[in-house]
Length: 138
Image (spheres, rainbow, N blue to C red):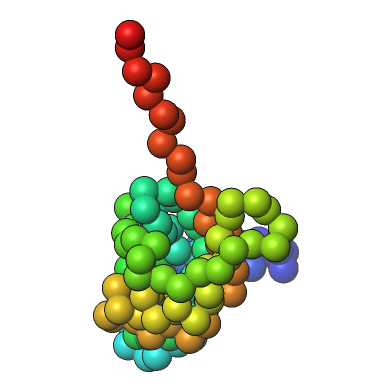
């Protein structure tokens, strides 16, 4: 027998379905055991402020299983009003407000009770919607 044939025979025996199943199970158990640790990571969050949608990035800390659950939940959205935040007029855009990252961090911490918000990286610029004025019918 040639050397290459011996290697193929050994690999066919080693990669049996039972071996692959046990390998997959051990990887899942290892990953599950690591989810109980605490981690700090950047996480994108979907936020609605007075009905307007924003996507911002925050550095959050929490248990690995909670972080994975938040990442996988596509419908996770946090709703709050501008009254809960502190904002000042934007120097760049007329009529826009710059939201304070500290106030946004505080509000996010109140809504995300299972995670600790360490920092908000990119606070959005909020442009209040103006309701169209209705013309009076005469």
